[in-house]
Amino acid sequence: MQGFLNLNKPFDWTSHDCVARTRKLLRLKRVGHAGTLDPAATGVLPIAVGKATRLLQYLPGEKAYKATIRFGVQTTTDDLQGEVIASLACPSLSLGTVKTALAQFQGKISQIPPSYSAIQVQGKRLYDLARKGENVEVPARVVEVFHIEVLDWREGEFPELDVAIACGAGTYIRAIARDLGAVLQTGGTLAALMRTKSSGFDIADSVTFSDLEAQLQAATFQLVPPDAPLYHLAQMTLPATTAHKWCQGQRIPVTLDTADILRVYDEDRRFLGIGKLGYSDNGQVLIPEMVFEPA
Image (cartoon, rainbow, N blue to C red; front, side, top):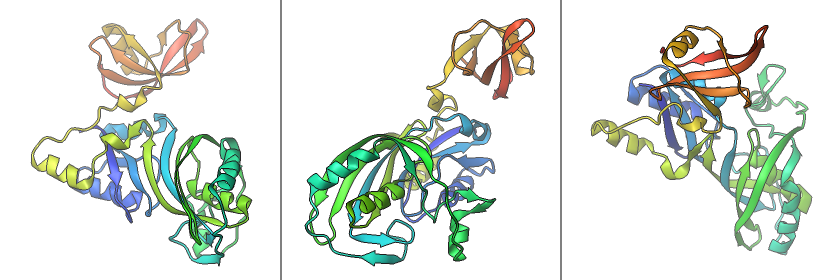
């Protein structure tokens, strides 16, 4: 059993909890996930099973979310799971003002990750350091936000904004909520988050644990093919003899004008693995980067 599970992560579960539950249901040890989701977040959590765990590094990085931002509130974790450190009603805040401020959060932006996050500083997770009360200077990093769309606006003492956000890997929506509140001088925190797309998977095709249990009981469960989310990579088909040599670790002479990393198939359209273009004394070669199936 090898491939991917497009899991709709439940609220209040860690990503590690989801991996452990999947291991138990599928009775397999080799299970991993792509793109950690906070416990309070729901939505797409790609789960790799069997040899597909070796493909996690090749999945596309683009993600999309639906988020609710609450203004007038600041917390230690930049979401409602943390301790409130500032609260100031802002009933006069208008949607027009918020939209104007939102414009500066699109494109490539500099972002400081939340102090409660899985990022490592000097070999230690930020959330571990934060729980110990240690103040660590977290370096800013450049992330990319492709698009932000306003979905809804609710007025009140603590107004709320619903947005759809498409972004690149490493973008923290909690940080956007925090920084937007700072720009507006009201404070802001993330009130709800659902990931709608991640690493080539969409919420529309996701399954819950209840779905998974029902499919297993009915013997209808099927994993997503291991190469399905790798559509962003170029592909190459090898003849049978050449495919066999490549799967044995040999470098294959090629002449290609394409990206450095490719999906490799045999003539029967079997996915063989991931190849990398390189050069030898005799010219361009296709190097076995990760052999998924023997030819």
